[in-house]
Length: 271
Image: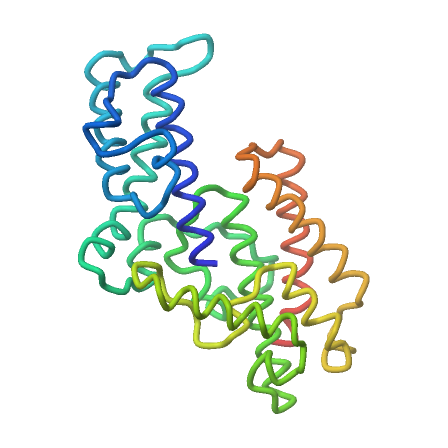
């Protein structure tokens, strides 16, 4: 999830910088050792941030706060770039120093979205919702829901004497966990995940743990169809936005909020 968060911020930054370059902001890529191809490589993040700062400087210098180009407000989009620079600067510092980065060093500035249903104790999930920092509301909602699902899975497995996902014998999921651990160990500038291998699984894979291990989760206030339908719906919306950089309609955002609340309300009594 942490890797996903960083990449989402990076995608947003590059998209907005590219949009300004296409509109004639005269920042010379070559001065920063970049091309349009290398601008998309997160390994070049230190110089990409310098380019982004140059773009913002030129926007502020040559366009007023109300400058609007057929519905495209220059300062508004410069603000988006500034927000992502702030999110990614701790990553750049650690990349330059080649040091590991704690998750809270990235996630310390954005306030949490309060998505828990009425009657649920926020203190119970303070480790998830405190200091939450994600690019937009949808990702905040899903982040909280996804990590409460992880707490639920860990609790049920621990209650049955199972300490890891690999102990369940799900070969495909175990291989993905091991691959992600190996890849992350080579990139020390990325934030460190939780201490259970469930943190190396995405939302769709969490569903597979519950469905494939149903004997452990049976009778925990959820049905297979409920958890499958809700997670599939959330996963589809999140993937569409992440892959196409699209914005959600108000109705879609309400659906995300509803699905997250329903999942949390159902699994909370078992945590």
